[in-house]
Image (cartoon, rainbow, N blue to C red; front, side, top):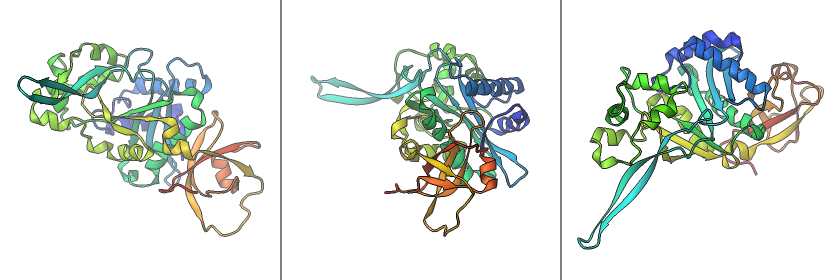
Length: 344
């Protein structure tokens, strides 16, 4: 079950932050910063005009004493009211007609074009649950929330994923590029970037293009490569329809995914379902397929996965499921199929 975060989640979130790999900057292993993140999330749900809206969700295993096993978030606008920097992959053509030579050179251009996009942030799931349906619910559940309340978000969605770095904090891209301009190692730069200092750091990076062939081979190979910890959420978002070819993180060179909400799989499949009174009406379960399910209500929002008839306009839920979703009379469900193929 996917819930809104509450103050009581702080110890579990701190545990997850401490277990996260270097580069998961939006899940800071700092108790006070996490407390502020939870408080900001609560304000964001209550006030559509919250200037720094962040939404934080937790994944709960109801079969394991309601243990928190994952977390993920949404930042409504990239940049915190400031510029949000990324490197844009480009190719520059250098030619000499006199010599009959023409070269297409890979370059990285510092850009803040992604400023104002909605950012999927802070994905973490307990390794024991990584390959199960919980990862799908945690990642796609955020998209269900965004598609259900699109007025609160940008149409353009992005998600930064950590690049290559080892347990000691050595990062090929940062060591070859960023560290040349800062007296900081990669973990220290990431800690600053997790706060309000990202734009300040990025503004000190070279404004001229970075010519990739001038970088050493190890750094060139690391460009756009994914830290192993991010493979599962990355694959889910690629399946949703995100693109990974254009943008790189300015600090570790990891891939930044970009997508348009109306084109994403969850948003395209989103539909409303009425809730019938009286609980399940019996009948065979044949033909049911897994769906994301959430109540269309900000206060008390929560989501889960249920087998549903992909063609039905209404559903009758048992008392336990209705209680978990905190359904009240008049509620409408927002549902999106998780089936691999589109339903006709």
